Image: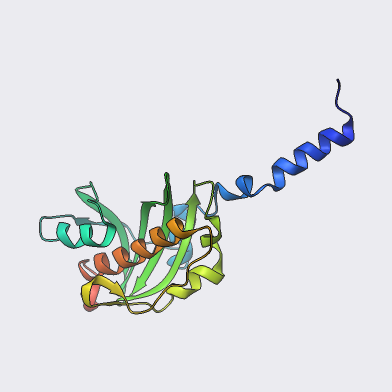
Length: 178
């Protein structure tokens, strides 16, 4: 039975407006995030070696090993920018995080690959991290409100925020070093 134009349009509109189609996507490229974070002129990347001293704390933050020898980051005038991935439920969420002198300045979901939990990309959620710092036990100094149906994505971004703050403290740009 052939489809009419109206039924074809309705089917395409349903697919285009479904939550799944809105969930997966590139919201900002890492390069654009870095240009935005450093007023159009990002510095050359630096490297932080993940040595035996850092591994236990990273494992405690992420609940798993990082499985890399070094991380690239960008820093200037006491600020660092990190592009980090963490698994939500099954797939990585790529997040850009700017830390200014030990405080989160900005967190942004750059690439979301999961079928659920995409609401974490919106400012109503990410703005909760602005001004956050680490306290005893590598925990954030504040509670982060969850989103119903996005628990694993919320956990992933919270872990990444903690990780970026921890890594910043061990970077060349912490405590006004550079």
